[in-house]
Length: 358
Image 1 (cartoon, rainbow, N blue to C red):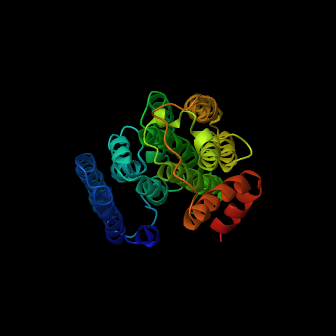
Image 2 (cartoon, rainbow, N blue to C red; image 1 turned 180 degrees about the horizontal axis):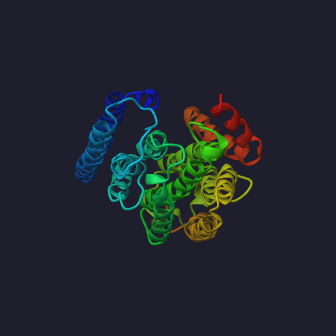
Image 3 (cartoon, rainbow, N blue to C red; image 1 turned 120 degrees about the horizontal axis):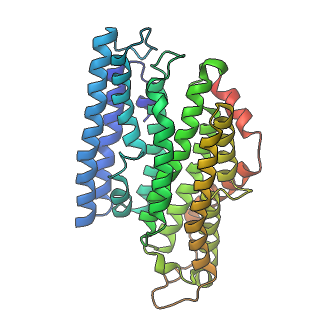
C-alpha cells in the first residue's frame, strides 16, 4: 500500500497494486481454513484479476496516447484518454467495492476472520481511495471525464448497500453491505474534490474524505473487533447480549452509532464535511440523496442496538466471553476514544486541509 501511494510511474504503481492484492487473497483462506473461506478467496482472486486487467488495459491506452508512463496530468484531451482513465478508475472502484464492482465483497467479508475483515474494510479500502485519487489526478484539471460518472456510481452504491444490509442475518455480511454504503458517501466526497480542484488547488486528497476515512478506520475496525471479542457471527446471537457482556455490548453500540453517523461521533462529523463539500460543488441534490440514505442506514444500525439492549437473552444468545485481556482493552480504547474525539473536534477538517496542502 505504501508503494501504491508513493509511486510516480504507472508500472511501479501496478506493482504496488499487486503487492497489496496477492497477500490479501491468501489471507482470506490462511486465517480461517475451511471450505467457505477457500471459495471466497478464489472468488476474490479471479475478481481481483479482472480489476487488475482493466487497469492494465487503461494503462496501455494511456501510454499509446501520451507516450509516457509517468504519473503526471495528461496535457491532451480526447475520448481515448477518457476511456483509458475510465478503465483505470474501474480498477480503483473494484478495490473500494463500489457498485457494480462489489459482487466479491459480501462473500469475502462473511467468510474471512473478523480481524482480517476489519483490515480489509479500512486499510485496503483506504488504499483503494488513494488509487482513485491518483487516477483522477491524471486528468487535466478542467476536465470532467471519468469523474463525471462518480455521482451516479455514488448514489447507486450507497442505495444498494443500505437496502441490501436491511435484510442480512449474518453480522459480517451486514457490515459488508454497510461498508459498501459508506463507499458511496466517500465517492461523493471524491467527486466534490474533483469539481472543486480547479478552484481550490491541486491538493492530493480531499480533506473531507480524509477525515471521513480516519473516522471510518476506527469505527469499522472497532465493529469487527467487537464481533471478534464477543464471538458474534449471527444477528440472533445479539438478543440480550448486553445483559451477559455489558462492556463488549457498549463498545459495539458506540461503533454502530458512529457508523450510523449519530452525533457526537466521528462518523457524524466526517459525513457532515463530505455533504458540505458536495453542496459547495453544486451537488445539493446529491447531498439530499445521501442524507436520505443515512436515514435508511439507521434502520439496521438501531435494530442491532435494540437487539443488544431491549431483547431478552435466549438459547442462541452468545455467551459472555469473560473479562477482556490487557491487549483487548487497549484495542477497544484505541478505537473508542478517537471515535468520540473526532466527533467533538470540528477543527479536524481544517487540520487535515493544512496537512494535505503542505
